[in-house]
Image 1 (tube, rainbow, N blue to C red):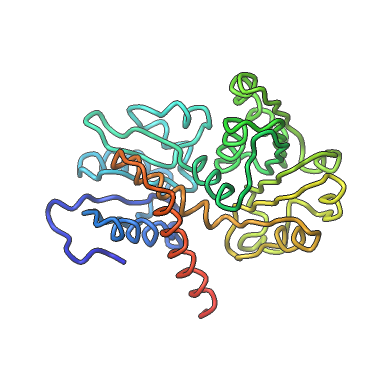
Image 2 (tube, rainbow, N blue to C red):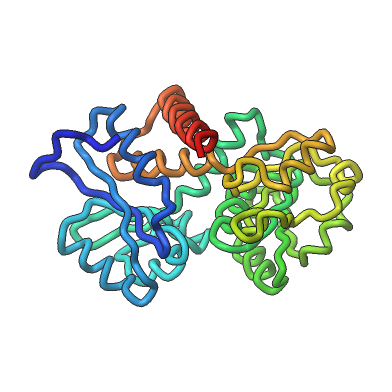
Length: 299
């Protein structure tokens, strides 16, 4: 997918993370760039936490046009930027950097990614009761999306309830303006909720060595609470235990792969100050999804 005519004018972009070898960002960004006929190249760079400041300063010195930021740098990178977009400031995490004369400006496109991932499946949070499990970087973005997009109630559940409380407090002012109520709770408190339309999981339960774990251990709760959609930010495995059990209960399920693609495309929109059509976004998402799912089958 890499362009075959790299030259001295080709713009360079990269994703920074630790570890980073598993990242699909280069595949997504280079595929979209090639489909656009855009003179850019995108790679991945492994940056340890104690080298983050040097990496950002070095990127500016080298003229690297932009970065995506992934685990574990989404919060700490904010200390090394010349400015932060208000929405990213509200979320408290940054995943996209754009180079300017004064340094890098930070943005958060995760909030866009999850919105489009749900929208493409016909799911709208407006006027709905939304439960977000997890209060890390992705949890911040997903909760913010629900608040900004007009959810009626947003419940933030986290293993460490104090973290959820801080997140709910961060969104309280924006939520009040939008007529939304935000409430924090511990993970086991979710079973006391009686009316939840959408569940958004942003924890790592279901991924890696936690593949057989799920934040919703009592699947019968879906029916009691009236849940109609479960979104899992995890996409590897393609169907987590969370999604598998929700589907068995008759709930609509969506994994996080489309969110990954859409947040990546939103970064390109920021870097090039443009707006892609819905058809183009859908075409890129379908192409990348086909490639990824076929690669899973071959393994």
